Length: 256
Image (spheres, rainbow, N blue to C red):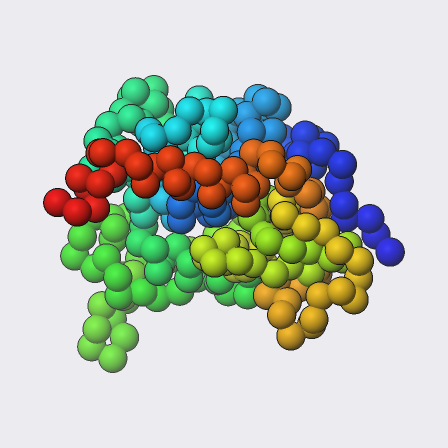
């Protein structure tokens, strides 16, 4: 049996070269692959392309508490995303200096991004999509009329690597998720050439009910366990969410 369990996050990202493309998730703090992000930052690779549904800062936390994707900004060449920042958090002004230095930002929509990743996973040559017709999203793209309706040709995305935040894995890499962990990680794992998962628990083969497996091990290449009470662990996530809930600024945003 191929050993997919790695002892450290640094070891798991050791072969990622300059210029690699990486897909990962960001639907809240708990679903971030924080340890893999931190390891990639330590490695210092450059000219990366990052594919993610949300690229949002976490102003309520220090970097010691939450390692967010924005720490990779100095290492990025291109960003493919539907969302850069939030209006209540200063929108996308935080990346302005990087754009001025040459960072390319390719905007898309959430559904289109998921569909392009699926196209990459399924080996499709692209998809015709009505989303974005008549907007800046159609600029430079082929258009076609099908049954009297205009569509934009969107090209597949096949990342070099996917960083996955799972809940539990067996030693073959079969994954199950918890809550928002699931998001679009399953299709990213299918589309990527190499999938690396950080998980709360690693169990023996056969301990996960096959009916509960969401991402089969054939799509997962490396697994690393999140240390108990460590960065991104369930325990720390609960503490941070409780901390945020007590903040006056958050209460004003939620209950204004």
